[in-house]
Image (cartoon, rainbow, N blue to C red):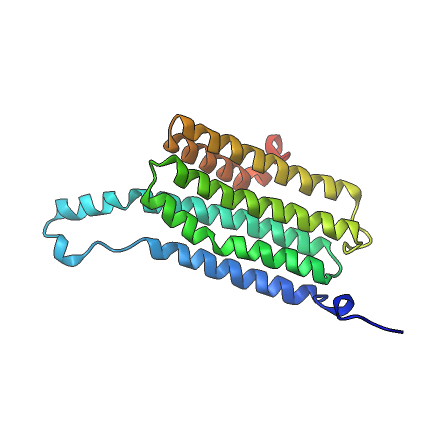
Length: 209
């Protein structure tokens, strides 16, 4: 029987999960590089240090927002891996594309921090999040279509994961749309959504998230 390379490539789900952890760890670490300590020669008093630290506000805010973003997506991806029994070549490449977009988060974060009042910077950041979410959803649909999931995964699990991603991305889109009024409104709304996602499991009224 002839076996083609594409039939045997990319089947190790554990190696894919290990790569996922590494990519997210590096991306999360790179985020903090955007927080630069004020130059010693530019600070000569407590007041000047306070002013310099205040100027770091946009960088700190976007750092926290992106760390939450990556944390939420890491949890979502690990959940998907736990529900899968195996991988295939296409699933591996969908995930690699997902990782590609994850590694761009430090860039889109730095761009937003540097131009926090510009709508275009906010839109670029949102597009980065949107594509990550769509790829996560695509990977899950591929796993479902080609029977990569564990045999005992109930259908309502699929609906729960699908709902969480779609609702989340819809809220992010609403947050991005608020930049018509102010990018600060967008950032505030997106962070509120992220905090909600982070604490939702503790409160019954929010279990739909």
